Amino acid sequence: MTVTRSNLVSGLDVDCIPDAPIGPMTWYGIGGRADMLISPHSIESAAEIIRRCRQGRVPVRMLGGGANLLIDDDGVDGVVLRLDHVCFRRQVFNRTGSVTAARIGGGVDLFGLVTELARRGLSGCEHLAGIPGTLGGAIRMNAGGSGGDVASALESVDMVLLDGSLRTFGQHELESGYRSTSLPHGLVTGAVLQLKEDDPVDVRDRVKRYFAAKKASQPMADHSAGCAFRNPLDSESGERVSAGRLIDESGLKGVSSGGARISERHANFIVVEPGASSRDVQSLMNLVRGRVADATGVELEREVVVWSRRALS
Ligand code: EPU
Image (cartoon, rainbow, N blue to C red; front, side):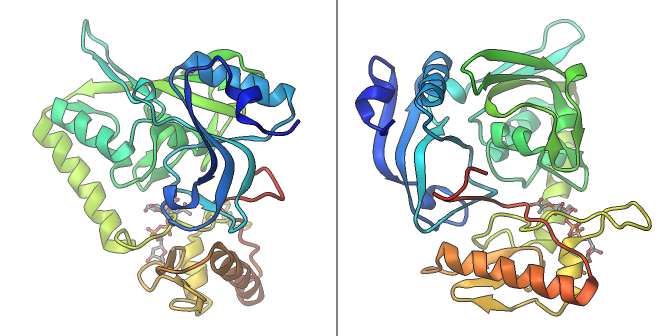
């Protein structure tokens, strides 16, 4: 089926931009366009779009905050769904009884969420301080840092699955691992977080500490998509080892390809200069994988998701 505005969005409450420049919407800020960018104004519209895409065999991709994403220079085919409408950015707090919970939309920005929780004296997400992106994206890839991952803060997750059905998954149904979740593919529309009441000053201090630790070791002011590669498992110890350390020990800090460069501050960050292309980043990733394999025998696996016309990843 050809992707046209009329057969995909007729009768639905959505914003729809054909041939949309989505590269600049990512943290890298580079890469091409999407055939169709759609922002639904309700969960039902999002579900119907996903259903129509499936029926028409149109590829559909979900764009969170674009924090862990590289768009190919040639862009992507099909539909990109973006949860930037206010209905996906609601934050509802419930402090009745002994349970404190927050129902948060999948399109809510993590930086803002962590700050808002600290302001309200709600503890449970401090370890997410400094992690960019939306809550939905963070849940999808089980983002985390030194203090743990987002899965540890979840009570339940609301999703639209790829057949267009709506499902809520309780904590007991979720299995999570290193940057992975057992959630099926689909759109994370929101989640209920498990939180504890605490002194706002204490919560804010912990947020500050996590943020400062990240800032001290990572190039947070540069354009990047966080760590480019997953930390591999060491076959002898069974522990994960820092991909950044392996890249550093392979002598690659500062190495560049066009406008993309291995950060001097943390070698698992590929940072880009104005004018860089997606091809520059992908060439550098290939160079890193080859050089680290030669130097250490370890095959690095990409953490950054790459969208292209060639493959739906
Ligand atoms: N190291 C080096 N050189 C480098 C980078 C690190 O020698 O260029 C050494 C450090 O000195 C330290 C060790 O490697 O002794 C571990 O470094 P770090 O604490 O920075 O942790 P990491 O394993 O490299 C992981 C996550 C980060 C997360 C930090 C929190 C992955 C791929 N990376 O990095 O997550 O913020 O722990 O401590 O899991 C991300 O996923 O995008 C990300 C940034």
